[in-house]
Length: 112
Length: 114
Image (cartoon, rainbow over all chains, first blue to last red; front, side, top):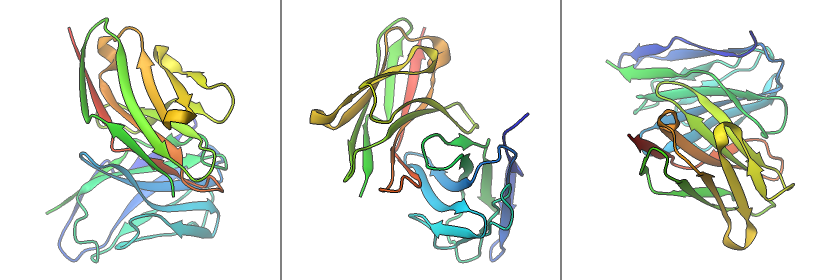
């Protein structure tokens, strides 16, 4: 089945630790996105990538980093500089322009 | 800059009643507008989208939305609520002239009472 796979489903971070969230898609989509979801705040864009080896900051990129070395993969690293990382993280992809996004099932990140 | 405002973080209706979820947008370019639905602990699914064709857009599960330029609105409706409609609903707009990403509203949680 085609789709977007996020892993792990739950992740715990210790103080000062970097953690990486995985996002893989087999839809052959060019564009991929990372959103952060906090209760009552909707989704906020962290980073997005329109093409391999290129990505742009979204509204809340500070404390996060990404890479896009392969078309199907767009991992997100939550660095120790992100002081409030507890949130639900959603990865999405689209064929090109952001006219229909396909979402993964999310990763819940919590701080120990 | 583009943005969306969803009025009402929680809406409660009785089963069989009309569902109305409100969304207003601001956009410096002709907007593309979307409604997504999220069930607990899941990602989002597209309900419907407006991309400058017909102003009344029909989506999945009996939902529809009407684009009203004069009111800068894109409200979501369903004539008769079903228990399975209980979820969180997000309005979204294309973020820039290149339509490279979406900006989402803060969401409205719909409760359906038996």
